[in-house]
Image (cartoon, rainbow, N blue to C red; front, side, top):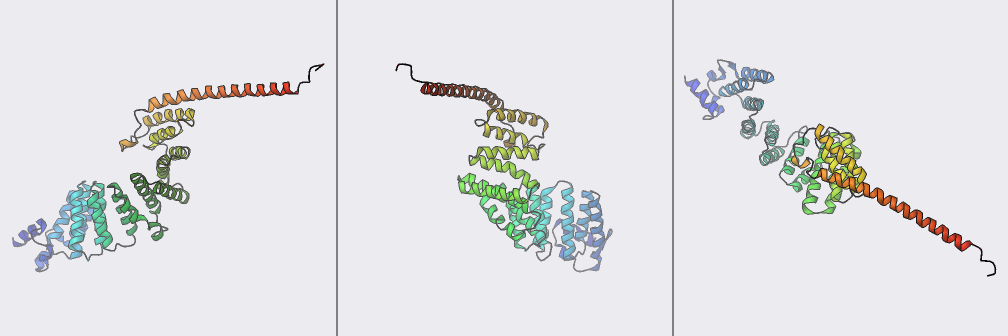
Length: 356
């Protein structure tokens, strides 16, 4: 009876699990040893049976578990909650494991996992705190680049672009051959672009362009590189480099034709070409509307087609007709001017009248 009460108290957190470091009776329950429960919990996780796995890990913690076993049980229970889309309990368990047992070699990784779950749940401030704590625990080289990258992304998401740049500015030097480098350059360029836009700083916008160019040249075909073409179009638009910006938008659509952002890219390219090449602009507006019907809807309303697109297309068609008339008029005027010059030359070269 006493052992049962102690187990319940430990499970509820009334008594710390370390109270088990005594009688042998607590080393094993009706379901077996601590190791038995951990193995059974892992097996249930593999079978996607989250609730049942959670019970096994909780039972393991009521027994005479060693610190490393308690960490395993807390992490396993967190994974069980994740299988059931219960993110906040999972974060709490992972954070508890790292806080109660700071000397465990998995502490930094547990904090990183907790940060990732918090970020997925939209809790960016919490994620930032967890990532910074993970970095303070000297994470192993295999997760260090990922921790830095996710920290920078979370900082960007809460509008702290300057801090994100500080985190990523040495990423290329520190991890020159890492697989995450293209994504890190992409995030660094976006953060630099955000900072330039927010401060109306042209030099920062030009710096963002330089980073995008490096990414596009060094890592062709990478997902981050493809997305960089869209972002390049945006920053070049701000720099009033219309022709090049339109070219990057259309390149993006060529590389990623089924993207949810492809219609918006076509509309933006058409906007940039409206006065320079209205006929091409009209064609791009029409294509944007076709893509909007076939491609997935963008998750960000900012990248949906604008309500003014039909009016802009009519304007482009009108300008295209006007430009044709203007060009024809210029050709006619040019022809008349040429004929006039020939007549003048003819008159000037004509012989003087007889008897003059």
